[in-house]
Structures are given as structure tokens and as C-alpha cells.
Length: 282
Image (tube, rainbow, N blue to C red):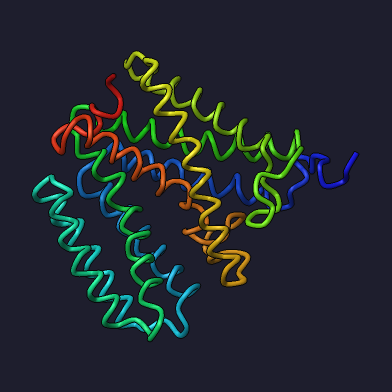
């Protein structure tokens, strides 16, 4: 058997204990603030967005200009404030449009596209979950579903990939990821998320199952995208703030893609007043 196709063993990872401890600290905080909703939830994800932006700029921009970072942070704050005040993501886009001009103006020569990409990437962290949570009727259920999709997919992909092994998913971007991990993570993440919505009293439908499967797959695409950026700039991790994971950007790479996709689907079906209902009720 090709040595590269042999399973590595899920429990042989020296960082596994650190990952578990980090999860035991972060998951309760995320769920508690989701239950609170309103500004406590929004501010938690604004903090996450600011940390992601900081790590992104350190990774891709030479000698990260302080003025650029704080200018982009101001635009993130404005985008969140507009979205929360008017309960309409269209107003947040106005702030992000201004942020794009700030990024072009303050970024180092030849790096404006990376500065703009970092702003959009960070905005996804805060606006995606906030838009879903703003639906007072089903917002908490939608966030629990989102957590279940992302966390379930991530954990299942990790254990399936290391236990089963097999052909690599995209070795040029992420040498450890396998097709078995991708498929196992997507299927199990979907099942866990559907079980969660059933637990909170929502009957899963075929439409919701298909949407959940697609977003579980997209969350892994987000992981691959971040891997491509890190490889482009010869970095193993985006940061070191979370033991066993690296940086905040490393932890939220799949989440932010899933959150934006879920919010977009919810807005398309339920409008700005009921995005969670548009996402969950088919």
C-alpha cells in the first residue's frame, strides 16, 4: 500500500489535547452569546473579525500599516452598526464600500487587492452570523444549526481523514486532507446539523438537508482557501493565539464561508426580516 494513503491515526496527533481544551473553552462562550443574542453576540463576532483582519494583514501585507488596519476596523464597526440599526445588510455594504476606498488609499503599493480581500474576509466573520441571529423568531436555532454544520463537519473530517486515509483531496494546497475526510465530514456534519434542528422543534425537509449538505461542503472549501493563502505566503498558521489550531483565522476559515452562504440563502428566501426562517423553513 502506498505510504501516503495510509491513515495517520486520529489520536496520534500531538495537538489533539490542545484542540480539545480550546474547544471546551470556546464552544460554551459561542453558544452562550448566541443564546443572549443582540449586541453581546454581535460584539463577540466583531472581535473575531478584528482578530482575523489583524492576522490576514500580518500574513499578506509587508510591514502592516497601522492606519490601514484601524481604518478597516472602523469600517467593520460601521458595517455592523448599520446592519444592526437598520436590520438590512444593504446598509452594511455601504460601509464596506467606503472600506474598499480606505484599503486602496492606505495599502502599500501593489497590495490593495490583498487589503480589500482581507476586509471582505473579516466582514464575513461578523456579518454572516449577525444577520442570521437578527431573526428573533428563529435566530438562535439558525446559529445552533450553523455551529453544528461547521463544528460537526470539521471534527468528522478530522477523524475520518486520519482514521480512513486514502487519496488526497488537494495535496498542493493541504497535504493532510483526504477525500475520505471531506466526504465523511460533509455527511456527518449534515446529519448532526439536521439532528440539532429536529431537537429544537423544526422538522427537517429535503430542501434543508440539501442546503445543509452544500454548506457543510462549502465550509471545507473555506479551509482550503485559507490554506492556499498561507501557502502563497509560506506560512504554516495565520497566528498562534488558539492552542492546537493556530490563529483565529485558522479556526474560522470554514465558519465564515458557511456563515455567509447561510445568510445569503436565508436572505434570498426570507428577506432581511426573516433570514433564519428563510434558511431553516422549506
